[in-house]
Image 1: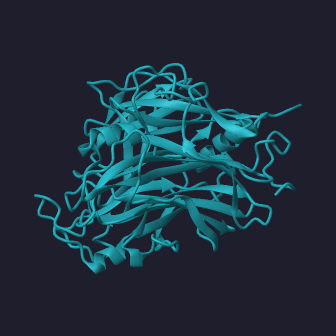
Image 2: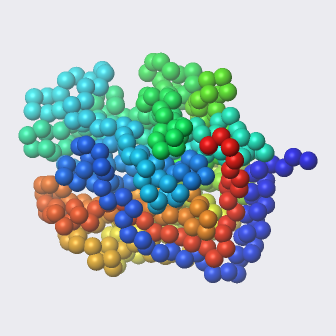
Image 3: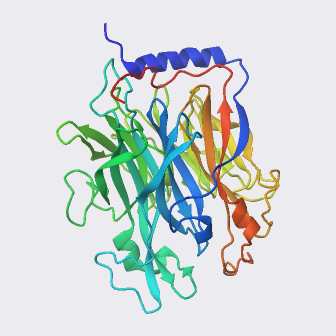
Amino acid sequence: MTFSPRLCFLTALIIFQSAQAEAEPPVIEVKGMLIKECSLPGETRKDDVVPRHANAIQIASDRWCILYSTHGYRGVDDERSIVYQIREASPDGKVLKEGFLAQTTNDWKPEGVPPAAEGKSYVKQHGHMTAFGVPAGAVVADKLPEHGNLFVATWRVVGVPLIVAEKKLERAASDPVLFAKTKAVEWCQFRLNRERNDIDIVQPVQRLRQKGFEEGERFCEAKDIAFMNASFCPAVPFNDARSEWVIANHFDQNKIGVLKFRFNPKTKLYEWVELGPMVGDAKTRCWEASLLHTTNEWILACRSNGKVAWARSKDPLKTWSEPTFSAEPLVSAPLTCFTCADGVVRLFTGDKAASPQKYDRDPLYCWEMTTGVEITATNRRVIFDSVVAKLPIRAEVRSKVDFCELFPLQGKSQLIVFGVSTRGYNFPYGSTGIPVINQAEKDAAGIYYATMTWKTAPPAVYNLFKGGE
């Protein structure tokens, strides 16, 4: 008799949830900085650059790959490069290698865009990086799958004008032609190398386009879509073999759509093969979506008009319910939502109404979401409060504790990883009254983490690794 690995995992999860029903909730413990500084040329603290936002995947039994973006102080969303780290044993283990997946440039000359005006140049920004794939040596359906040790990384890009002499960025939308020609998602595919200390790129960086739309203005099957932005949250498996994955990206006109990737045995690469129906319209604007799978349905969580919008589906590539809104939290900051290792849906974001600072990005909170007839938020917990942590960030500069990600389970724990930065820059921030950032505030910025640990280990996604690593 053959058992579905997904069915076995869900059965183990249900048993675990039943056993945990009256047990203590997971312990959340702040650990400090996970990534304080990038080591690569042009992206170090001496270059006035800090790590900002991170995601991770397990790529072998004792190897993890962290992807993160870097950040500067030249203006709003000064997102720079996409960096990878190969770590030993655990996602907070020893760094074996650090390198670029995509490196920023301050003199970008994108195709189809007129040259920058005198005194200006174009900066290529990268952000919102995610990855998916089956680890090397992982057993799926009693065998080593052909798509094992093949990983996909995606991130968003856009061009932004830079006033060169002032080292000051303008907003991306200030140049409509530049914005329209450069707003996109890029991707690459890679493997863990034979020495298991670095990666080998097997598909170079290119714009993400749906299969069948490799050329021309249209990049996907949707006829009325101009651009796509990348999700904060990684793709999730769509089938038992983990040869198909889905992710919820957001598009222009404030719409959300689910992309399906499938491994092609002939090319030995993944392809974007399908796009689901759009969620959101002019009245119910939707963006920054998280896609998650529970034991019986798919759920979409996204920002919408100051609240969290929720939609449900039995098949995210066919149809979605009309969005509904939870009463809590009130949201004007990035949000992420995950089905955690214990099967509980948890939402991570800020809430101005709950914040002692009356600020939407400090503290960072976590809610447990009930997903019965209605979706409601319960058991709000503080993950990180910069004031309680006594970070040297002035109140008028405003700390930002955001871009929270949940790394995959390892043993009894999952890492909760988030960025700490400020609303301050190297110049006064417009008419907001936010002053120039100082060195102590820059020193406090970086990628921080906490652990969420259960007394009993939740069921592992991959219970067996063997050969082929």
